Length: 505
Image (cartoon, rainbow, N blue to C red; front, side, top):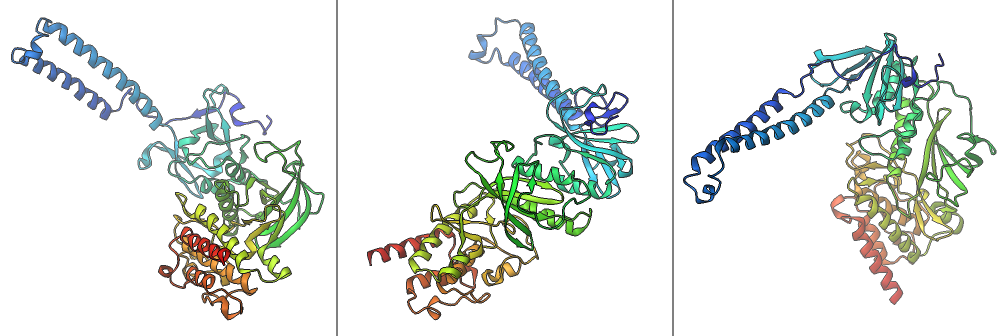
């Protein structure tokens, strides 16, 4: 048998398990009791009707109808209610009995319909699992697809196939945690995720979904070592390396040429000929802390960027894993980071700095005013690119960006000269980005990085410093949170006012 065949095409000798073995009652006891109460209530209403007919002028108009006919109508109405109730309850009971992952550990996986009813569950040791895959359509004993949707299938050496509907399989277990354990504890199993799109309950962008599916099904041997060279191709020729743009602790960024004949139009808009490939080097060995940390960094940035759509934030086109390296396919911006601009051309004019800062406040307002605010946590001159074509600034590098709803982290991230005190404590908030913007303005005006957690006035380093702009920077970079601007929009108001005053002057 070809081991590459999807599980749903494997022969009829396998026993497919889709639901927990329970009673075949049409309705559960609670629903049946509720329906009987409704039926009894209708009978009581009928009795009251009969009693009150002679007492009410309104009801007397129905007195010519024999009581046995009224009882028949009420009986029919009760049967209708009961039929609808039985249909709804039977579907609900069937769905409730569908298998879910109850518990997942290094020893194995527990599958059942109820989280706390351990007696009514299946335990499958990882040693017995031979295949883990995601397929479109349900598998039957005959090997035919019976229904639509996506399913997680686990095949075992006992020839049992546990079939879990994707939309409810991970009700109690995190998907990424599950696949991480599969990689480390069931490394012998064949992984197959040969579907274009997997439905996820949180409706994350499918580019991000495909990223982790590709990662968890990657082979265990690295084929290439060192940096990519010009001319090398990725994704079956979809991207051709032109040159290396930068290298750092997180990996390397490459400028790449797009092969329009191999790229899906939905991923990269027409007219885009070059992209940036941001590379994350992922460990080969499974199950270690470094592997999880590296993948979390990659997936966090992909997840955040996939949900953003702002003209002054770098766009994510696609993401993939190849040869134990994760790649974010990003918009290529022809220009220079503000840090390089200052080093090559010197400090900037106050009006230019204020105009750029006003652009950044618009970006921060977009990030901070979301339903789940995003904190960049690394807003520096290195991560602000001046676009040569539009002469506007764009925000890059969301490597350490996080949603503010995520719990506090003890990890200190960011460039120290641009970090506020609360970020050192692991308590970054939207005001932390405002502090970093103040530090960036200080650098653009002076050419030097500010002292860590000690904002100085620009006038201490520049004779022609403007007091009004200096006051804005000092307020945005205040040590105490309550002394800073409440939000980026408030800072934008002061910047606009200052720019108008300079135009009038």
